[in-house]
Amino acid sequence: MEKKKKIRSALLSVYHKDGLDPVLKQLVQNQVRLISTGGTAEYIRSKGYEVTTVESLTGYPGMLGGRVKTLHPKIFGGILGRREVEADREDFTRFEIPEIDLVVVDLYPFEQTVGEGGSHDEIIEKIDIGGITLIRAAAKNYRDVLVVSSMNQYPALLELLENGEGATSLLQREQFAKQAFAVSSAYDTAIYRYFTPELDEGFRNSTGPAHILRYGENPHQKGLFFGDFNALFDQLHGKEISYNNLLDVDAAVRLADEFTEPMVAVLKHNNACGLALRSSVLEAWKDALAGDPVSAFGGIIITNRRLDEATALEINKIFYEVVIAPEYDPLALEVLMQKKKRIILQRKTSRLPDEQFRSLLNGVLWQERDSRTEVPGDLKVVTKKAPDEQQVKDLLFANILVKHTKSNAIVLAKNGQLLASGAGQTSRIDALQQAIDKATRFGFDLHGAVMASDAFFPFADSVTIAHQAGVEAVIQPGGSIRDQESIDYCNEHNLIMVFSGIRHFKH
Image (cartoon, rainbow, N blue to C red; front, side, top):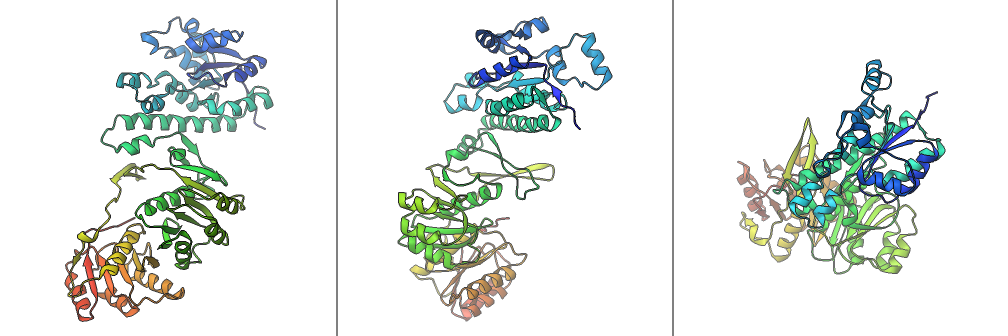
């Protein structure tokens, strides 16, 4: 059985004193020696507790206006020293280094100072050096040291002190160390973003604390979210949001932002399986669900209008994970809240960042988001027959949907309704066939429908298959050396084709 380590000494150096009192009381009751710096030491004395100052241990006072307080071998030796290594123990004795078993530190409020519009000099002074170094040192040596890196962890620390009688297990110390590295990472990221003015302002302002998720894509994977979710949404109801929920929510809001008309979309695995533009939310819901009532099970529902009771009653008939709306009728909320775990999000007015990051190999990819949305003036009619007004609307509608669908992607649409899509296929033919099969399975008549492709057609085969299924108009970027084959086929069969000139891959 693992032997727990008794906390005999603690270094406390905190900017915020809120919530510190019960921690001090419990440490003193457990006969823990308190070591502290400047303002924290004064605070501890004001509560009537004995405290050893860092200055008395190191022989050096705080200097350079407070920039240097804890940066000394006696402090970091006491944290980093390995108790089981004989050479380290000899150094403890030789240099009179005190063992430090617990480090309680929080960081200067860098993000808060930036958010409050502090001057550059004020912001620079809120870049914590000693605190972040103490956190990293203690987390590195978690085999011997417990690190508390945020006042949000005080309740967990108190529980350990009370239930464990001041002793901690290796697993407990490791868990606190993981949280410490999350805090450290988020803090450094915030500083990096401040010093990177070329990044979009909205992206830089989206920085938030690291939030530990239940798990990643699967239960055996760990997950974190770095960001301020509460700046974008009020969660009105439901279970803790998950890694996969966050991916779907991001896809949902970015798709919804493309439309000004009343809309409802249903998404599954980041792709829309149903979407409709209608005069009312209820009608939009019915036609969105019709697009794929099977895939809608367990999906994400989003609307860009106030969600009313009648619509809530209808969507309550199926199982889904998350619903998103800018507003809810009170009676609609009563209906939606009948399911205990259902996540209900109310979206706030906010601007999403225009950059994307993706980790791969031993680095990170960065790109601007695909924020291009084509308008009628962007379309180049390349066939003898031109689209009418409704067909132009449907072509642009389908083009938006294909932009938000995993490549290779094909979208079939008509009258402001997604009929079916083919997503994430290894060939465009496969994507098209998948879309046709789905539309047919759910009873849609494709005669008069339009087709959108996220990239050009290398051959005329896709256009041929779409025509045989009933499609009458096609939008694609163009750019293939064999574009003319597709154009000729359309002209021979009285079909419409327009080029957008823009590819919309989404990998």
